[in-house]
Length: 178
Figure 1 (cartoon, helix red, strand yellow):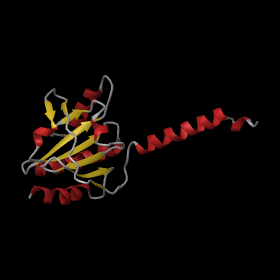
Figure 2 (tube, rainbow, N blue to C red):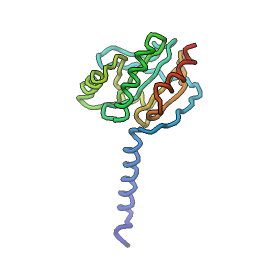
Figure 3 (cartoon, helix red, strand yellow):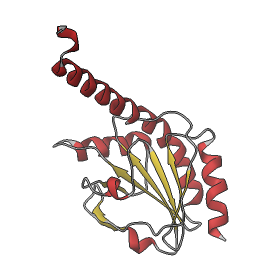
Figure 4 (cartoon, rainbow, N blue to C red):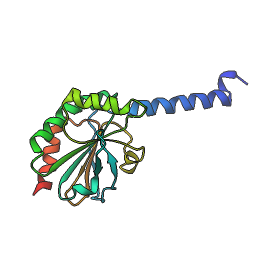
C-alpha cells in the first residue's frame, strides 16, 4: 500500500482540514446576512461584569438589548468596537442597552478585557462568558451581534460585520423602540 494513502495519513489530513475550517470561521470579517430569528425567547443568563457586578439579562426586559459576542484577539471585533460604542452613545438614553460578552479565557482574561475596554473607551457592561452563554445563543463566529426586543425575543443575529453596521442596527432597532 502506498504510504501516502494510509488510513493514518488520511485521518491526519482530515483532522488538519477540519482544524483549518474552524480557525478560519472563528473570526468573521465579511458581510454576512443576518439570521432572521423567529422571535424565539432569548435564553436568560446572569454573569458578572469585569468589575464584579452581576448582570442579569432578564433585568433588561422593557429595553432593546444588543448582545455583542467578541474576543480581544479578534481583529474584526476590534474594528467593530468603535462603531458599537458610537451607536451606544447615541442610543443609551432611548431604551437601548448594549452588553458585550467576552469569550476570552485564561488567567489574564479580565486584565485583557479591561485593557480593551479602556483602549476603546467602552462604557457599556462587559461580561465574561462562562463557556455556556455563547453556546446558548448559537455563537460560532466572532463577532456576533444579537438583537433582543423589549419582550425578550431574539429579532436578529449578525455574524461578522455587516456593511454600514451602525445603519443596519439603526434600521433594525428603530421599529423595536415604538
